[in-house]
Length: 285
Image 1 (tube, one colour):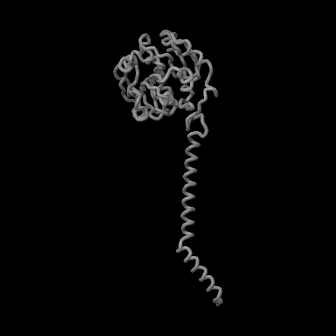
Image 2 (spheres, helix red, strand yellow):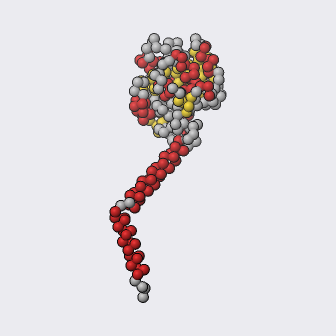
Image 3 (cartoon, helix red, strand yellow):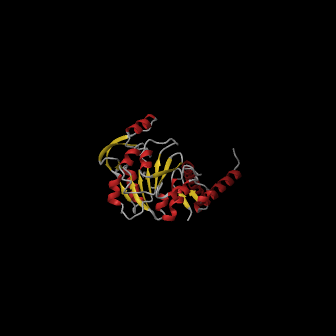
């Protein structure tokens, strides 16, 4: 079965290349967002991988529950304290955040946010509750829009050792929270411009498959509607509208042919022909 990529920047391709020999495996996705669109874990779920999706936006969490019934789906946010925090929600984007600084920055560019209170839990406590000690923890993905440090501080990397950590961090600038990952016994592996990859020191063999960018040898295809695919989502909408118009035209043509073939139409044509013939026989005055 050919690998279908759903992630925005081929993250799932890189994870599959690196970990496919060890699966079906286990993951935790902090800031899972939608279960399919731009999802890092969708393609792996289709191949039998299972894990924990953590997503505080209600309609995304509900979608995860519908489409990922065999995953554990938690409608909470991850922070370094358990309790409640103000959440800046952008309901139709992946930009929701617990970081006031990030919300202010994004808001200045015109992105609207709704403020509401959400429950927060420490990642270590979630692992304690849901992750069996004897299950290999293959990867941890974190996408929390500026709240990365707090999420990392909430994790006990001495007890819970994901083989690979994938953290969204745009551009190639070294982030201030990286010291927490390196200090926890991880090696920096690569940056793809949007994410930074780290490998546990006890799994150095995973560094090798991360050296090269995704390419044709990975034998993957983009999912329909992917922003890098053709036709794009807008093209697909236009094609659907064109097909609908063609269907209406075909239906109208069929109805017209049915009228032309009816007895009533033939009778009307006969009457019209006779009337024209009578007009030619009667001289005009």
